[in-house]
Image (cartoon, rainbow, N blue to C red):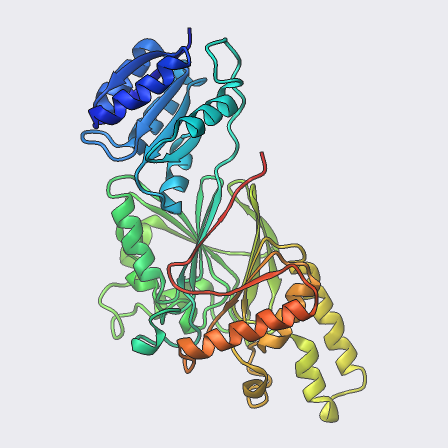
Length: 435
């Protein structure tokens, strides 16, 4: 007879789950807190553990990690239950070792179906459990603005912090750019992992100030238990490390980079392809003043492209055609074809969309995109989800919403399946791997 362990500090819920499983022929063990549950799991080696997320003494994440650390429990399947349906809770549970995540109240049919999926048929017949699917990938926006932070009542919905995006995938936490949005990200990481050491990777597209200005305020960089790798490409005048340390020199900041460097590794990339853990990363030189790149991350759940500063070539060359050399417009078209190849089929594309068509006329050659071109490129590249990014500091929420509606109309007119959103602080995108 198969055994199931129920760990929950709510006796009524434990009794309800026990009744459901007993009717299906399972032998039941119960624990009212995480520590007792871990001991029972070691003693009885159940096939399935149903564990509440929020418990005294030992929470659900800790239970998952403890069970996964036991070789004798390597075949045990873990279902985390919680009254909270936040995507980040589910992602964290799966990364801690859970196989599934159920939101309370647990319905008998849902539980039965889930047990069938993770244990073969849900009955007490002995089966070899299938390998769990990889955990989902989470993309979260912490800063979406370009040029300068713009706090205030007119930017409450989309947010006023500058460029910063978090990607959690395949056991890695990757941070894309270190604008002012990295400060609230650091506060969240400190709250979420109060005692655990963190292994973080920061990918910098370039060192313009709106992409690095938040770094001195990133709290995890100041803890010696954490490891932070900073990857980027050398600038025109000085190395990556010198640029980052310059904004933390004594006249500008009370703490120098050298004082926190014990846990920081700065690596200037030479190649355009590298790996972060199991994630393959490709870089692409953007059309933007100075040395600036975009990144494409290939994860187990799909691809994420981050290109926060870029001006498509074709419109720029066409506007300057009267003063341009012969073949200039054709060259621009060919360069945009290379961009389409780089973003082709991306599950998530986060890209510079700073101006509307009228605004672009007075900003040609500034290194930022017209939203019309971005919509067309994404549709042509068959991007699945397009996120307009690097919002102009003069654009309020109403203006960005109008630009979003316009981009959606353009994509629809091209008969494209691409979905379009405007990036906003706090927005979380979850990509689920195919089973």
